[in-house]
Length: 205
Image (cartoon, rainbow, N blue to C red):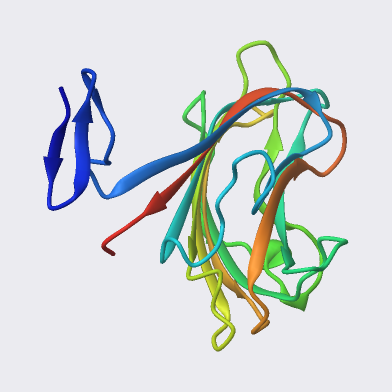
């Protein structure tokens, strides 16, 4: 028996047919020795358009093949290729080593971009030891706008190759009025050995 409200099926055959919360799961990708993880609108059930005003990417236990590498992302404008959109960004980080003898909070000028077209780093020196990995999230705001730039914010934490806990706070914008409909994640060198990547749309926001 279905439960219907105002013409919308809410519950059918014991399963909810409508989202009950503001965060809607769109896609999960499990990496396995992949060069990158790519979310492209219209490909493999990915939605990345005007359906939601905010999109949230989560990455969990992402482990590199290569030791001490940066984790990065870039986007493509609609109909474009190459992952070379212009990015304006700012970065600060904090770290603390396992021995308790090294720690800092600092602006990280080496990793910001001034309308650069490189992949934007979200953390660095991720270790490839068996127990080393990174986790974090990236918000992308109104990527389908053809009026405004496309803002993003990211937070990451990782087990650094130098036995540090390292957290980065990265923000910026794609400096284009072209809609962004593709986002890719990768390490600066070497493949993604393993990790879970999730994409959500945030409605009513």
